[in-house]
Length: 156
Image (cartoon, rainbow, N blue to C red; front, side, top):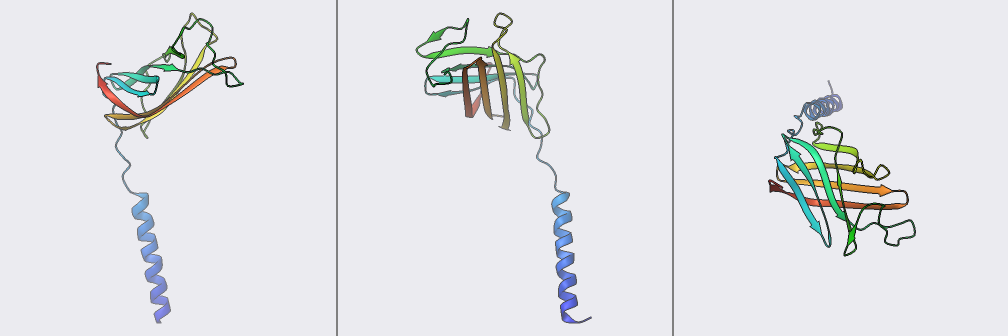
């Protein structure tokens, strides 16, 4: 064996060793959310998700709704106070996080408001912190709120 063959063999061996080592690395541990609420306030707007038995059972937000032209609007049946409208959304059943600590659900805000829709998604950073996005819309009137530093609050 000449010198270039040895170098080539060593490079291939090192590359295979590295590839095998990366592919067999353990995945990050699944985080079980604590029971209570993960809350954050952003200016006049705020929002939270409610957890029970390690699953997401609801989400609520006070948001500024806008129409397609950017003007403030209020969905039918909801009330606005100081430019902010509150909405609570529940999934059909409790939602568990996936293997990457993410969750999402589309829910109805209430059976009283059948045209009002919502989508909630996010992920848990650790047991005390989550990133949450809450979207609510009815026709052209919509709102979205992203909570990047939602922290756990015992008991809601």
